[in-house]
Length: 156
Image (cartoon, rainbow, N blue to C red; front, side):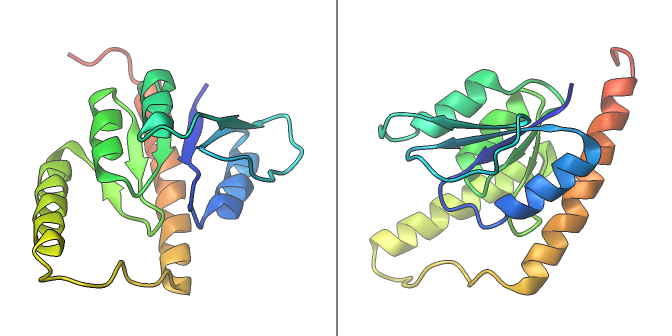
């Protein structure tokens, strides 16, 4: 069965994931450093990990399987999940792929260096209604792609 994993701390699209997952009959696992309220559904699970850095990321990578879907804006986590054969979608609808992840990692590192030098200030752009809409469209497309992949016998 296809599962959806959410890097849940700070994820703004959890309600959208619940709605789409219910429509498709998919399980959702939220992974967080703290307890959070979730709908009382048997197909939604909350996993609370210790507060160590990257504990949630490590848990997701350990449990994700090929063709599962991971929702996260964390680029290093996206890279690790892609290596395991998962599909990865950011909360703004950004699709991470093997072809795009190298550039995303390089861009992230560059911005980190610029922030360390004091050149860049500020954070990410505010989350907007169009981001939510784009996410919903891409989540539906990603689920369809994952289902098609699972139907294909071992590709050589």
